[in-house]
Image (cartoon, rainbow, N blue to C red; front, top):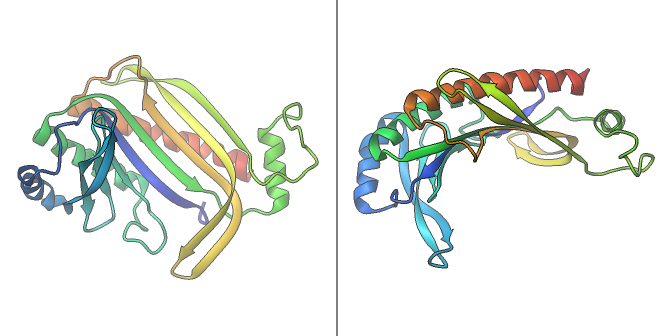
Length: 246
C-alpha cells in the first residue's frame, strides 16, 4: 500500500557472541572486514550483565550508506534498520535489507565463528492513516463480540496476536514460530514535510525458530531461513492487507 510506512526490519542470530567485545584488536579487524560493505564499528553499546551486575561494553556496527546497524550482545546479534522518512534508510526495501543481512551474516560467521542455534526475522509497519469509522469496523473484525466488553465505547488502543507453527523445508527442515500482531495506535511522526499525527494499525510480523530445537548454524541454513522467512512474511502481509483494506 502506497501510504504505509515500514518502521523496522530486523534479522537476529541467537547463540554465543560473548567474546565479540569492542577491544582494540576486534575493532581493527572489523574495520578491515566490514568496511567494504559500508559498516564501521561504534563503541557506544552496553548490555547489563547479571553475572557482574554491571553494564558491560558491547560491539556495534553502523552503515555509512543506509543506516543498517549490527548490535552484538552476549547471546545474540541483531541486524536491523529503521527505514523512516528523511533518514538514510528511507528507501530501503525489506528484500534489499534481507540480502544485506545475509551478506553481513556471512562476514560474522567467517570472522568470529560463533555458534548460532536460533534465528529470527521481524518486520514492523504502520498501515495507512485511518478514520475512526474504519478502525471501528476493523475492531469488529478482529475482536469477537463476546470479547469486546466495551463494544459501544471508543477504544483508544487494542491488540490482537497469534502464533502458529509453520513447516520450513530446505536445510532449515523444522517448524518455526510465525507470529503476527496488530495494534490500534496513534502515530506521532516527524518527517521532512513536518509533524504528522494519525490513527492507524501497527502490524508486527515475527518469524523465529523455537527454543526447544536448535537450528543448524551454517551459512547455508541461515540464508535459507531468511529467504523462507521473507517469502512467509510477504504471504502474511498480503493476506492481512486483504482483510485490513478490503
